[in-house]
Length: 225
Image 1: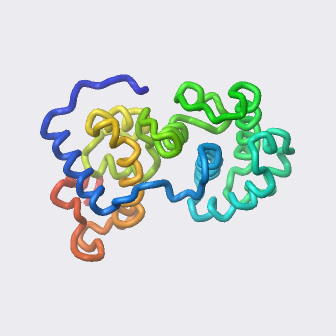
Image 2: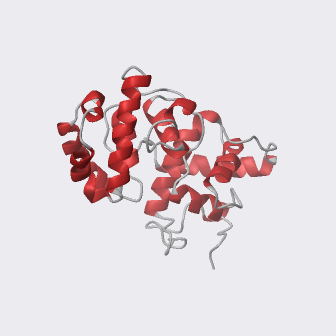
């Protein structure tokens, strides 16, 4: 876990909780937009989603799991074959190599089961803290931290929840503002809202479809003119 910070000011936590409540009402069933059936499926999809859209990954994973339905199958696969299947997700050399390495380690070290701790997950190929948080929170219901991707980075700063652009510091800043049981959901909420309303280039501050942005009254619009 990132180093602990001082407890947030009551007004800062209250504002964060108000943001959470608005987004929770808007997105009552938060879950990854990646298609998966188990922890391994989510891990693979999340690794493939780096620098790639979820929609593209969801087109690739059916063939991926048709070829290698079990972790053991992927552990024995040739990297060149994996590259062929995942090529359209970008950075396919590294993704193929990492996924094979992850499968091999799961088989040899963890008995064929995806580990359920942060310390163990980040030893797998291609799995850093963000991916581990997603797998733990969404596949296992274990809230170890908050996954920080580009949407979470952008919205956290705009909303004044952090002063940093460093994912590790952002996670450290966010965790005290939300209850542990909210950690997985706030990631989903910020991702959904970032895609739907708070766009990187043209955020819909005054016209979010049915009126202004629902977070307008709580948002200092940091970094925006």
